[in-house]
Length: 228
Image (cartoon, rainbow, N blue to C red; front, side, top):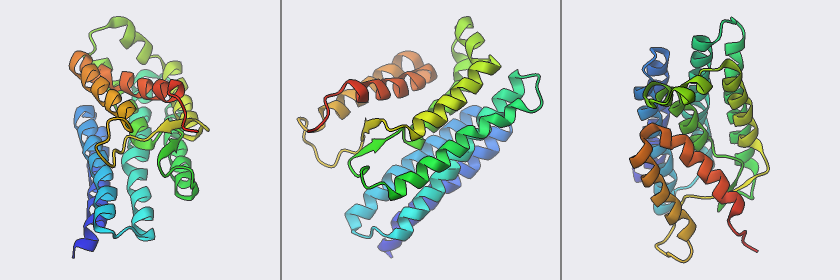
């Protein structure tokens, strides 16, 4: 019975993504953000339990990607479509928001066959990208900074973010993994520092801290010394 637990958790990720999609269609971006976050939580622990129980399988790998495709691929693309529909006068431009979904699909497919990504990532992981995109309407609604709102409600800025998102997902950019497999401070000091930074950003800036966290993750990965 326990051997089915990781796949069940993966399906909870998919279920969370489906619920997030419904909330996003209703314009309830906070609930959509929370359910995507819940899905990402399940996404982290399905692999954790698969390793602990020693029940890793090809089925689990494929199921994981299919669930991520909805939670971290379809939902952010749809949210960007909704944002562009709100702030653009053009009837066709909003569909370009689904560039994020296409980029996510390519990223997940490449991840399944890329043997270099066992202990680190090449390109931005789809969950991180999904949190970045879903935080944008929350920043617009609650930042209190008129200039930030003006920038993020500009159609061309949103299209630029969509294109950059699809590119960063698939770029040959090495990024450190957040998975801590043991409690060695020396080995995981970068990850620990980043997690503390996350708490600081969220405590000080709330939802505005989310895009700051994702940008910091990319910058830290670039400047951090690479393993020989």
